[in-house]
Image 1 (cartoon, rainbow, N blue to C red):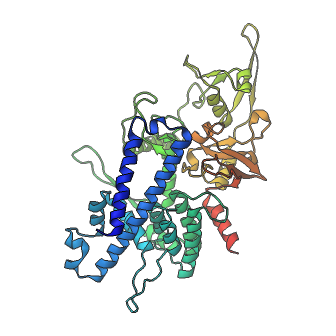
Image 2 (image 1 turned 120 degrees about the horizontal axis):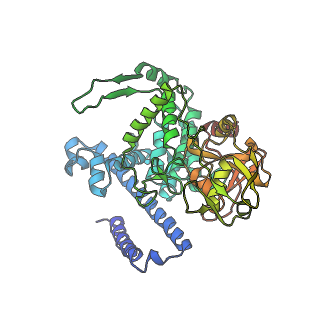
Image 3 (image 1 turned 60 degrees about the vertical axis):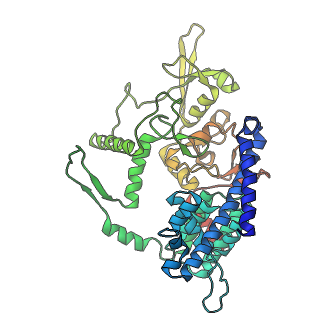
Length: 475
């Protein structure tokens, strides 16, 4: 065993002891919030460090197998068909993870020159250094490689992208933002790939036009009719919008995906009654039936009580103003929080009903505070999705939030509205994130655990705006 392997084995034994302590009754269960977050960050750093060694080991495996005949290759001598199978057996990861490890290893591998025997630069030399420093992991490297696959950029352009992506991964980018997540790196890499690929999407578009199609087969013995084919991206996007309109998580937590802090997760049976047992594919099938029915009915959805189905929340004006007290949903004697009422009021209309001392309705007035569909489309173009960094909820699932509350004089104007997902909109007053508008541009300040400097930063998830900012920086 080499010195490095022996040292890693010793480190693994020490880590196993700490893991056992963390799992014990006196471990993380008793940790305060700061210690828990610190442990999470430290565990992430250990993982990225281990993944860096994993990628380098696989890079050396690839190098050695290329130099040898098939029977003498490391994979063949260990009874494996290829490097992916060897990675799976040695590390116990899935085939998908093994493929990501291979992609990362090839991207940071330094091949040997056949003429001089010297180690040549890696395809992504700066990201190789970031990987070695523990600033980026396998998933981040794999997303970058995937984004640049098929890109016609030259070597100089690719190195420029590599340098900026590595800086973003290390938290040393142009905007001095904290280190980027793997999803952030993917978004940045896609922007770079689109900027550098001068041919654009036209070649792929031509192929897609030739291959597009949809076939409905004959009913089989199982009673089902098979459907197969391929959709153009814009057709698939329109269909996905239809799915989202019904599976929107805000409409029904049981019918759609449940959300944790920023990502979809499985629904818990303890939330919202019995969990929906349908698979995602079954849900999409049922949504397609709804969309077809609505199309046949000229696009009119069923009415309820002579109007579109509307969630009504009642609350005393004094309670809403003070932030104390309770609100009520129709047909439910159990109250809900004022925060729930404020959240619903932010995205909906407010009807002020004045009652007399004996309970008689004295007056009614509706306050127009709903962003219309033209405003929402403009805000979507500007924001591109939920503005909270790291949140991947798409714009069609987001709500428009009044940055300055309507009750405090905030206008229903695009300069005062931003896209937030249901969760971040619901917790904007308590989750540590802050949003402000500067000359019509949204800025976000994160909590101290995300950004110790607590700097206000302009944010967007719009690919168009990101490409425009990229072009400005390159001029």
